[in-house]
Length: 141
Image 1 (cartoon, one colour):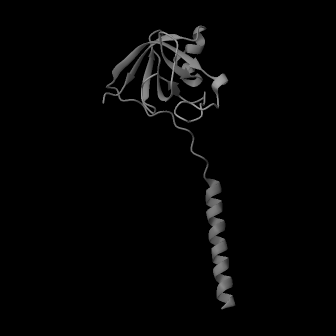
Image 2 (image 1 turned 135 degrees about the horizontal axis):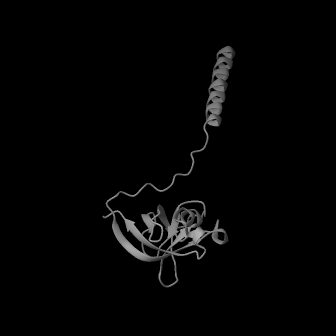
Image 3 (image 1 turned 90 degrees about the horizontal axis):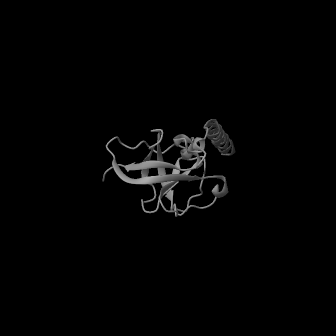
């Protein structure tokens, strides 16, 4: 009986070791950008886009998640959290798809506050002013 117990323990130890080794081989999945929005879109707003970054990095957003200025996210006054919005610059034509995870902007004529990564993708950081006229589009319901 002791011999059978020893064999079982050895088999169990080998199984655990193999599982641990398999777990170590797996690298964590990279964070995915928001899924692309379909081509058939409806316009939900026009105005100025602004951006926010380092000062708010790591703070909680209105949705409860932590703000990461390196992700493609944005703040909008009324769109539901999780909505993916295509933002197109009316200056250079560039587009970026962002996920709404916060509330704002709270300044007149501004329709969306973008994360630093999204602002960079649209060319807002190159302009010098930090704002650009944009159009916002989402998938129709």
